[in-house]
Length: 99
Image (cartoon, rainbow, N blue to C red; front, side, top):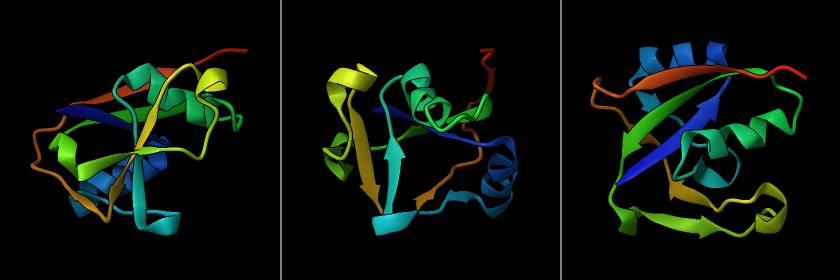
């Protein structure tokens, strides 16, 4: 199943160089089912330019994250335990949001 992870352009360069999305606090990688939904979690922190990477992960390898307000963000978020290794064929998109 396709999931999306948003991060800064600088972090995306490191992800592509390392060949994996490294876990963050709590040993998880945060994901969404739509690219723009993944962007919401950076925009709320004031980040206006970001990259989103598409990864294919088995649905049984992710869990719904309950650490945010689904009503506020209007989407669900998911977590994957540990790093996500990349195949090298992942699609990466750049987004820019104006105020």
